Amino acid sequence: MNFDLSWQSLATSFPALPQSGLMIGTALAVLAGIAGSLLIRAFPALGRLLRAGSTLILAMILVLIVVQLSRFDSRFGLALPEAGLPRQEVSGGETRIPMARDGHFWIDALVNGAPVRFMVDTGATLTAVSQSTAKAAGLEPRSGGLPVRLTTANGTVSAELTSIGEIRFGNVRAEGLDAVIAPNLGPMNVIGMNFLSRLQGWRVEGRTLILVPGNTAAEN
Image (cartoon, rainbow, N blue to C red; front, side):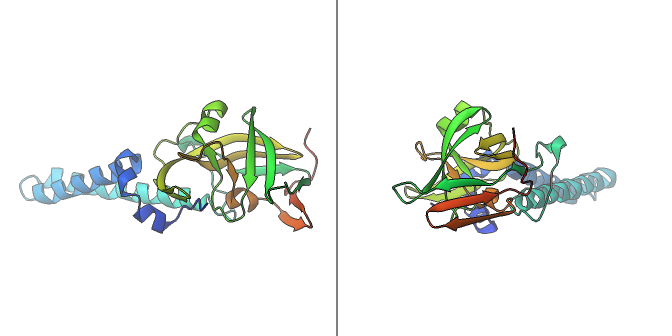
């Protein structure tokens, strides 16, 4: 599975656009700018006000888009609590995960206190949870989030961004992690690179996956 968030995925998200607050805001701002240009001769003050407002809103939307995209790069520690974008942090001690008989690494975690089983997928850009997991863990779609398109075995589907308050497994604790609520995922939940890249390091030794958070003091 490829859980990808990129400019290319945004460009193919047209079916999801009507559901995106950002896209609706962009459309309204553009219409306001057009209206301002049409009215500026007859009503100069109103026309200039509409055009200025349109430019300001579009600039704010652009900043928010850049902030949201940057959150999937661990080099940026961006957080805007007032916009519902919490800081993403991973702490705890080294955790070793044995390879399962199916050749994958599976994690039994607690997501906001709810038991959830994840498959670790280093080929997945994003952490993804099923709709049933989102409901059990109380995860809500992020208001004003970017439209996301996921490529799965069943084709390309629309998904919604969310923020996971807390994930706990082994000695690891993660807070504020970005994820997507993926339809048609069935019972599958996936830990992606947006989580792994926030660790101090991770490696595979033989048949064991070793996760090393930045803070190696064991969590209680």
